[in-house]
Amino acid sequence: MCFACGDEQANGLHLRVFAAEGVAVTAQFEVAAAHQGAPGLIHGGLLTLAFDEVMGSLQWMMRIPAVTGRLETDFLRPIPLGRTVHFAARCRGVHGRKLYHCAEGRLDGPDGEPVARASALFVEVRLDHFAKHGRAEEVQAVLDNPGDHRTLRAFEVNP
Ligand SMILES: CCCCCCCCCCCC(=O)SCCNC(=O)CCNC(=O)[C@H](O)C(C)(C)COP(=O)(O)OP(=O)(O)OC[C@H]1O[C@@H](n2cnc3c(N)ncnc32)[C@H](O)[C@@H]1OP(=O)(O)O
Image (cartoon, rainbow, N blue to C red; front, side, top):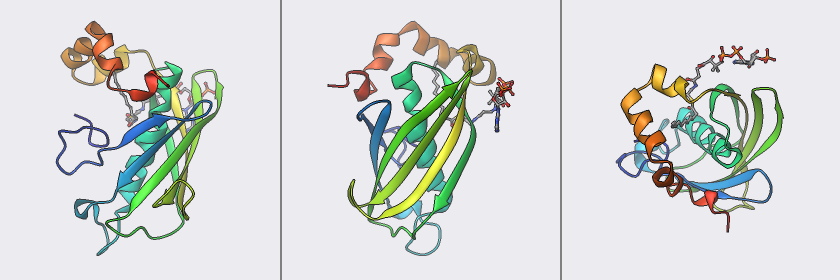
């Protein structure tokens, strides 16, 4: 039940991520009233969360389990509630266990005004990282049913 992509999260970001050209994805985020920081504006931490989710999605395409080691966000413009942020993220390179990603967000369309940029280092981990530090039974359920999990990620198909 991920706060960024889970349907069950009433106030979550409900992010949908799609394959793009190369090792890249796109996504959209409708900024709801629940995502407010300053009156009428998005909370910056939630925007960073969205970047974390979108860049983190690249690992599913690359089939490399990884966690966020470092994430830097540049907030370029204020983002009002009720608008939609369009994200594009791509992998810039891989060195050993380190995955270097970057992303940008634009307002109301893929060619809209740039409102934020981010870069991140993800670090490859073994799958037992999640069982060891999280809820082992839920991780095991995913490992036992890899087919079910794949269907949750549209870009696995990459039509
Ligand atoms: C089954 C279904 C599941 C499904 C699971 C779905 C997962 C979705 C995840 C979404 C994304 C998240 O939010 S993840 C949640 C937020 N992130 C976390 O909780 C991560 C917490 N941190 C950690 O667990 C650890 O610090 C790691 C794994 C990141 C790194 O620890 P480690 O494994 O001991 O590796 P370590 O040697 O320290 O680092 C490896 C290399 O990366 C570099 N490195 C590490 N951290 C940094 C850093 N902050 N800044 C610069 N560089 C760094 C090191 O210098 C080294 O470079 P070199 O010497 O090789 O050159």
